[in-house]
Length: 383
Image (cartoon, rainbow, N blue to C red; front, side, top):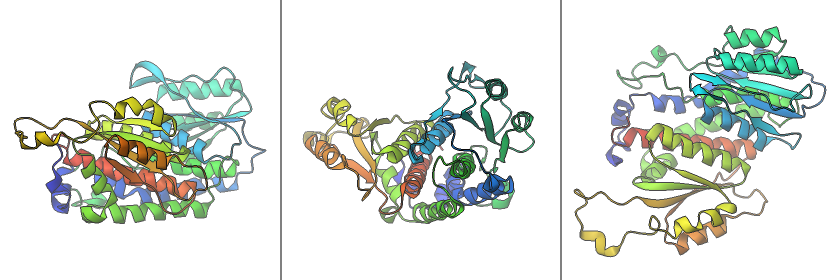
């Protein structure tokens, strides 16, 4: 259950946030600026590559963050070649192994993304790339084993921007704050790869565009932070709307799909709640029976007087539609609204009003990050 009394009490939110989640999402803009500076100091701005790679392969631990990074790079790409996430195998999360596709060779680029830079499986993957002739680059801590492995094969190391020092923000989260769960890792991994992607012609993300990313993240933090009341806070409002519901994320377009898939995964990982995702227009068919089933629709009016203390409310579907407005492409959003209305299923919408693909992606990712954190903090037993 969600404790809605916490949402408009910043001090109570800070005390309940024992994992330091709010700090992680609020500091995203600063994290992007630090990561961009480290990438420029590493020489990414001076790269003069000979053409674009045939494909870009992305590997690293933390399936949610790394997969989202790869998907976003692909969604922002200019159709110069595919961007693929390499999914690991292994007996346990701490013992992962990655394998290059059989076709990978000298025309392809391998990107490693790791906040720790210590994974033996990634070192093996770098050795595979060297034997195949693949160029390799990595976003990892300077001096880490993976950084050394990349340097040995004459690849490029882009230093990983670590989380802020907890001592520098003492008192923000309270005595029990635990900064070990780093929600800013996604932005620290993505930013250097945006800069590298711009240099190799994969996508358009010059330094001024990356600075706008940081500015947009700061703007979202101001609008979605704990001090902003629920009625004018899109993240708090969304968290409140998703209380006691089964969220069904519908995304319209590649950029929105990245955000919706990551939002569903974040709700499960942070708040311990199930969530589904589907891409429009296919989701109108694949989720049609779901909306017509027993989980959809409003509660029976005759059920109003039942004992809600002894009998918890049934889980009901709520559609969350993520899309862009005014992008000039044919949109499935009107049909999605019509289908939800037909089945009496409530709907929430997130749609950045302005900005290109990159800025729209940032807006959707940042707002849903805040919403998942509010769900995690205010859900009984999850703080």
